[in-house]
Length: 180
Image 1 (cartoon, rainbow, N blue to C red):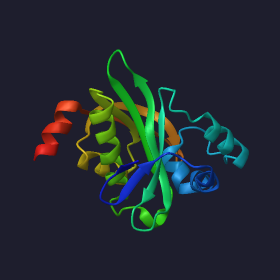
Image 2: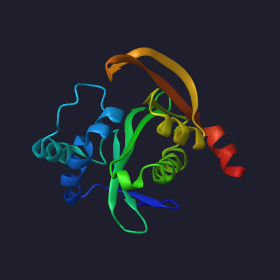
Image 3: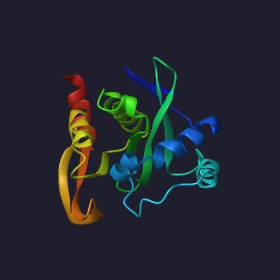
């Protein structure tokens, strides 16, 4: 378990699964998160996903829990690792809308970055974010991410083709920002 100012990131627990399914099936969450057809996830699919989580793999999934209420509010993790190049691809979502726009996602990302840079010794962390997800872009920038690339018209959302930003932060940038 790793702790920030507002959240802690911890291992997923079986009791998180129904709420995770509910969060991920929310239309607005799906709009901002899922690149494919926004078809609902079943509880069975979420349970299968839970069964695949293992500390023996090259992916690390964390539940995000609010410190004040001790409530599961979303998830984050390392979705892909390139050990040779020392690059991690991450993802995050806050599923409980009561926590949107209040710094919980930013805090969770800071905790995840601390884990990746200080415990895993990774050199670069990157992510992909939809260009219309302004709240997420601002949050990532607060964490030190910079836009490195643009995937033009990469996804079809809201009746038109939309861009996807590639954002990243390097280890030196992380430690330099930490000292400020």
